[in-house]
Length: 362
Image (cartoon, rainbow, N blue to C red; front, side, top):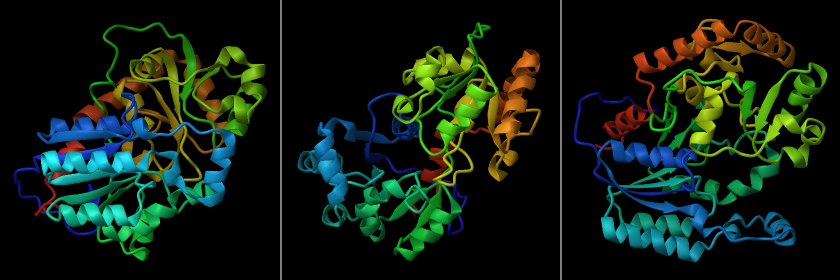
C-alpha cells in the first residue's frame, strides 16, 4: 500500500466493522474478493450488493440516460441509499467502503458522512475517470463532484493520485490487488490442457483488432471467453469454436488450469500497467503471457516467471514458443506461483496492511 503520506509501521488493532457497498453478484467480481478480505482481517462486514438495485432498461432509456448524463437512473437509488443507511444504523461502522461511487449525488455522501463522522468514508475504484475512454466520461460526473467528501480514495495509478488532488481529494492511496486464495489456486492434479491459449475478458479498446491479427491472420488457437465480442467483432461468427460465453467463479479457475498459456491484456484506455489477471493467473500456477510494462517487469522475471510482449507480432512469437515447449510453460507458471507465495502477494495481506495504516486509521 502506497499512500501520499508516510505509513507508520507500528501495529494496532484494525477497525472492527464496515459497511461495504459494491458489485457482489458472483465470486469473480473483484468487489466480492475485497469484502471477503475485510472479513479475513477480522472486520464485521454488512454488504450492500449494488447489482440488486439495477433497473432493467431498454435501448431508448439507455440512450436517454446517456444523453442526460444521469448515471444514477440505472439504479433504484432511493432504495439503495435507504438500505445503506439502515446498514450503518445497525452496525455504527468504523468504515463505510463504497466501490465505483458513480451513482451517488454529493448530497447523499455528505449526509452519510455527517451522520457517521467517526467512520472512515472510503472510495474504491481502479478504473480511470481521467483516461482516454471518452465514451464513458459521462459516467463519472457524480464521482468527480463527490471527490472532496471522501476521507480516502483507493486508486490504481500514480496519475490518479495527481488528478484527484486537483479535484480536492483529502487523501489518496495506491492500491495493488493480490491473489484471492479461495478461488485462484493451483490444480490439485495435473489437468488436461484443453486450450492452447486462453483469454478471459470483455471486448473493448483495440482488442478486436488484436485478436483479428492473432486468430485470423496468424492462425493461432486462442480461446476467448467474455462478453461484447459478437457486438464489436466478426470473429465469433467466423471462428465460433474459439469464442465462448463469460466465465464466473470456479469456471474461470478451471480454464486457467486447462490452458497451456493465459493471456493478460491490459486496458490501454485506462493506461493500466497491471490487472487482476496479473495475480489470478500466477495464483493458479498458470503461464502468464502479458503486456510488457514497468510494473510487470518488477513483478515477474521475464522468460522465467512470465512471458511479456510489446506488440502483436511479439505476442505471436511468444505464443508459438510456449506451445512448442509446454514443459517450459508449466515451469514458468509454477515459478510465478512460487514468487507470489514467497512474497505474500495475497489480497488478505494487502487488506490487513491497509487496515494497519496509522496515517489513515489513527
